Length: 184
Ligand code: HEM
Image (cartoon, rainbow, N blue to C red; front, side, top):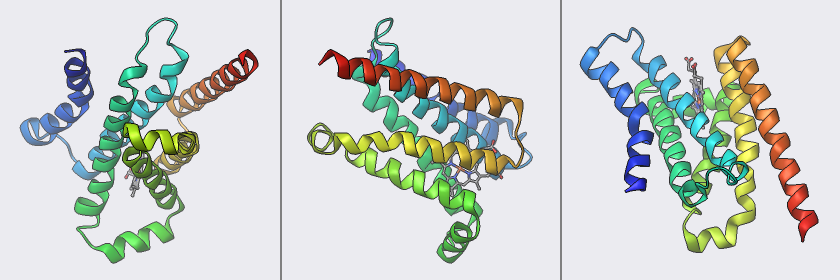
C-alpha cells in the first residue's frame, strides 16, 4: 500500500506535465517545457535518493530507495527521449553532432549512461556485485549540476541555493562515512 502511495506521488510530475501539454494546452514551447519538468524532476528525485541514508534516524525509507531511484531514471529517460524524438526528430547523426559539439549535452549524456548502468544493476543479485560502482551517482549528480547550470546559461539565486544544498548534503554524507568507518 505504501509503495502504491509513493508511486502515485512520484508520478505526479508526469501527470502535471501531461495535463499542461494535452488538456490545458497553454505551453508556448513544449520541447523546452518537457526538458525543464523531466530534467528538474529527475534531478530532485536523484538527490532525494542520496539523502535517504542521512535521515534514517527520523524516517526510514531505505527500503524504497531502489524504487525512488528508478523513478529518477524514468524521468531522465523521458528527458533523453524528448531530446531524441522531439528535438532531434529521430536523427541519430544530429544526436551525435550535438553531443560532440555542445559540452553541456555530453556531460548530460555521460550522466545518463551512468544512470542506465545503475538502473540495470539495481536488482538484488547484480547490486551485490556492483554495489561499489553505485557510488558513481555522486559523480553523475556533479555532472548533472554543471549540465543544467550550463543549459540555463545564467546563474540564478535558485541555482546558488541548489549548489549550496548539494555541498551541505555532500559534507553530511562524508561525515556519515567517517563516523561509520570509525565504528567498525
Ligand atoms: C541524456 C542526455 C541528456 C541530454 C541530451 C540533455 C539535454 C538537455 C537540453 C537540450 C537542455 C536545455 C533545455 C533548454 O533549456 O532549452 C537540458 C536541460 C536540463 N537537463 Fe538535460 N540532458 C541530458 C541529461 C540530463 C540528465 C541525466 C539530467 C538529470 C538527471 C538532466 C537534467 C536537466 C535539467 C535540470 C535541465 C534544466 C532544465 C531547464 O532549463 O529548466 N539532463 N538538458
